[in-house]
Image (cartoon, rainbow, N blue to C red; front, side, top):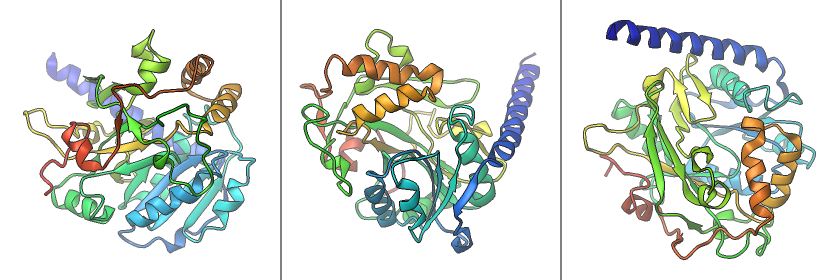
Amino acid sequence: MTFRLRLSGQTRRRALRQYLLARAVNRGRALRPVADRTAQITKGDLLVFVTQRNERIRLPYFLEYYRKMGVAHFLFVDNDSSDGSRDYLADQPDVSLWQCKGSYKAARFGMDWIDRLLMRYGHGHWCLTVDPDEFLVYPHCDTRPLRALTDWLDRSGRVSFPAMLLDMYPHGGIEEQVYAEGDDPLQIARYFDAGSYTISKNDYFGNLWIQGGPRARAFFRDNPVAAPALNKIPLVKWHWRYAYVSSTHMLLPHQLNRVYDEDGGERISGCLLHAKFISTFTEKAAEELSRGQHYSNSQEYRAYHAGLAQGTQLWCPQSQEFRDWRQLDDLGLMSRGGWV
């Protein structure tokens, strides 16, 4: 009976993966190339995949951050922006850009589009899938490029790398310090919650499920189980048969989600510093709430709207100011594992 149940689970997961791949091909037909520079991609290049809408003010620093890390090419999907971000991205020499005016929600919140681009261009490459407000921090990132990490992962036989989403926020109210184009948002949103996180295991997909942080205590205090998930697997040595299931929280095949050690040790991991909570947040939250294009009937943005009506300060006496990756390693929010 145990064998039959396990086999049934494997079969269902395989069927789901095949469905997601077919869905990505189908939904991917809606992508219209604006600037296709994928011919520039060479073997071994590090690639970044992004879906964005009206993030013009964030894009210059985002691109600078990952270029310095060693990323060779960016593949963007623009979901019908109206703020000039599409034209800005089209002018960047290391960006390939597609436009899609379709429903973000109907495309599995953009993941159908990203899975299609990953399938077509990511095969054999280390691919980082992030949002424009997410900044990867990994062990030794202050002295070693991302290539050093992926080379070590290759030598270790690992093809996926996890990073906990760490919500960052300013000391005062979110609107007090105005964010300007080109600014480092992490110089404004410098604080984070060091503890009060919950971790459970999804037995079906094999991934960890992490919740907590300022969003849970400020916006979901009455219903913490509904707080956004903070577990992500954003960096993967891609194969065309892979597929993200739910954002970058989990993948198929499910073995890719086994990024933790169950024998008492620690595997290498990083953090995605999430700079959502800056002066642009209130306007962005109102826009996304009105669009109604997010998960669970925009439950997250409804919680933001209610919370913002009561005040916009996320800082508390227990908040810690971010210093570097070593601090996060010491706090157990990420781990250098066996990489020294």
